[in-house]
Image 1 (cartoon, helix red, strand yellow):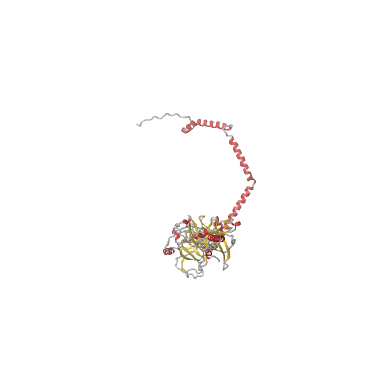
Image 2 (cartoon, helix red, strand yellow):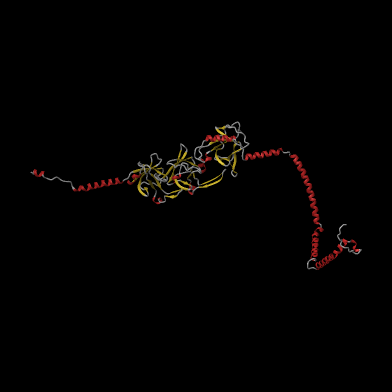
Length: 545
C-alpha cells in the first residue's frame, strides 16, 4: 500500500519552458502589428475627371518634392462620371489634410508660360499636395486640372470680375499693370443662370495697393488695331498677352485714385480700354435724334462732340425704327439713340444733377443748339454727332419718341454740300442764257476778225524778213559802224589829224583875240571902217550958271 502522507507531499507539475517561445513570438507579432498600424496614416479619396497617368501602388503623393502618400486604388465612381482614387497618407501628412488643401497632377505640360513637368517623363506622373491653413479636416478632395496660382494664405489681394460671354480668359492668364505682370487669374467659370463669366483674380503683394475703388479692368488682347471716326490706333500689350491674352487694369486719366479695394470686391471686366473709360460715366441723359440724312458710317460707340469736345456717346443705330414718329417731323427719319454724359465736363466720379442738366439743354435748344452728322474719317467714312449753335435754326417744338425726349437736328456734312450744289444749279437754271450766248457769239466774231488782222500782220512780217535786202541790213549796219570807228580813230590824241585840229583851234583862238578890238571899235563907231576914228576929249563936269 502506498503511503498517503507521501502522496499528499508530491509536488505539482509546473509550466514547461517551451511555452515561453511562442508567447514571446506572440508578443512580438502584436507589437509589430501595433507598430505598423500606428505608422499608417489616414486614407483619403481623390476625385478626378480623368485618371490618366495614375497607377495603383506606384503613383506617389508629394509636397515640396517629399513623399507623403501613395495611391492604393483607382476605380470608377458608381455613376461612371469620374474616377475615384484611394490613397494612403503618411502620419506626418495628417495635419495637412484640411478644408483648403489642394491636389493636382504633375505631368508634362505645354502652356503659355512654357514647358513644365519634364522630370515626370521618366519617373511618371505624381500628385502634388499644397497644404492649407484651415482647422476643419477633410477626407474627400477634388483634384485640380491646373496647378493653383498661389496658396490660399498667400499675401496679396483676391477680387472678382464679372464679364459678358466672349472674353477668352482662362485660369493662369496674367494680370498686368502698365505692361508688368502683378497677378494671375485663379479661377474662371460660367454662370448659366445670369449668363455671365466670373473670374477670380489674385494680385500678389505688394501690388494690391494699385487696385482701388476707381480702378477699371479690361481684356488685354495683345494687339488692338482700330480704324474709326477718331483715327487709326494701334495698342500692343506684353508678349505673354500677345500670345495668350490676359487682363490689365488702371485708373482712368484725370480720375481720383479712390480708396483701397477690399478683399473679395466685385468689378466689371470690359472688352477694351476705351470701353473701360466709358464705363465710368454711369450718369447720363438719353435723347433720340430723328435724322433725315443717311446714317451710313455711324456706328454704336461713336462720339457725340460739342465743338470738338466729347460729351456723349452713340448708343444704338437705328433705335426702334418701326415705332411711330411725331407728325411734326418726317415720318421716314432714322431714330438714333445717344447719351449726353455730364460727368465728362468735370471729369469726376461724383454724382451730377441730371435734372439740372436737362433744363440747361432745353434752354440751349431755344438758343439754336442742334445736332448734325459729320465725317470723322474720310478714309473709312465713319461719322460722329456734332453739336453746335445755328443762328438760322428753325424753332424746335419739344416732343418725345418712345418715351425718350427728341434732340433737335439739322442737316450737316455732305447733306449741306448737296443742298448748296442744288441751290447753285437752281440759280444756273434761272439765268437768261440766250442773251449771254448772243453776246458771246458777237465777242467771238470780233475776236475772229482781230485774229485775222493779226494773221495778216504776221504774214507781212514774214515777207519782210524773207526779203534779201532785209537780210543784208545787218551787214550794212556793221560796215557803217566800222567806218565810224575808223573815223573816230583819226581823232585820237596821238594822230596827225588831232595835232592839226589843235593847231587850227589855237590859231582861231588867236584870231578871235585880235578881232576883239576891231569889234569893240565897230560897236562904238560903226563908220570907223570908212572914216578915221575921232579922238574926243573926256567931258569936263561944269556947274550950271
